[in-house]
Image 1 (cartoon, rainbow, N blue to C red):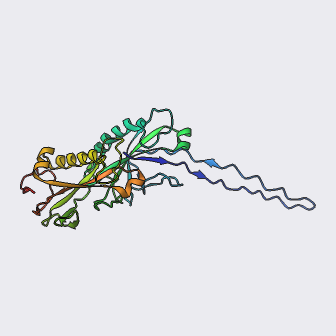
Image 2: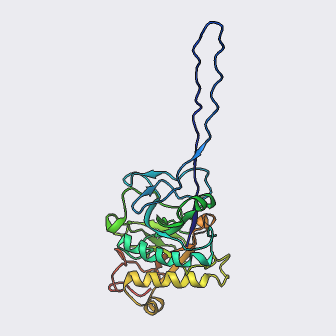
Image 3: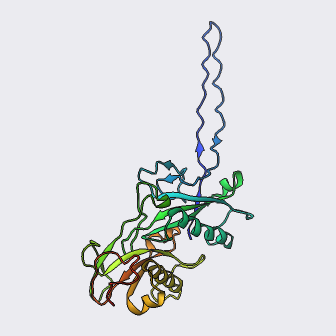
Length: 286
């Protein structure tokens, strides 16, 4: 789950200067007083809109852009919050919105949530917007790139609504006795594939290190996502193949709590093509 605050921008008012008519023996009238600045209408996102970048913390108004141009955010759904005040990150008040975003974003995509990095964040009004406008929440579709351990938000072109576009597969060769994954052509022999970005249950805390028990819900989310994309059970995945996962720490400061999930053949064996939808057929044990 991700929480972002949208800020309300101020529009500077122009100074209106009145020039007096020059008349003999008469002084010119003083300039009119500046008009008071007026606030722009509170922001209200609309499903289908795209924005150049995520929002939160910037002193600027989020700018809508053409979805055909570079952007990092696409609004999948806008709902209403029925709570007493502006929500805070991790607040139980946002749990219902989080649950709704999970289903709405998947429906908007026409694909499972998390597939090849397609996930979401929750946008809400900031305090000023909350006090002056509707109490909305926005399910913002974002993409986490496939760089293991150091992901960024992907800049894309085109809408991802209803399968109009799909994230491309990313495969890797596996370095023996190492977590190192080297990018490879999926049509060539490889031993690993980026499956997606898994979100743990709402309120899960990002793990601090490899021994942190907070890893458990993220590990389970990754295993279940990989198994579902392959079309096998979690038990079969555990018994037959391997996987690896990295916390998206480079995005944590932005409030993004997901892990990157990779199917991995630790045995050194290789396959060609994607593991998606294979049900494990023609994939050697590894």
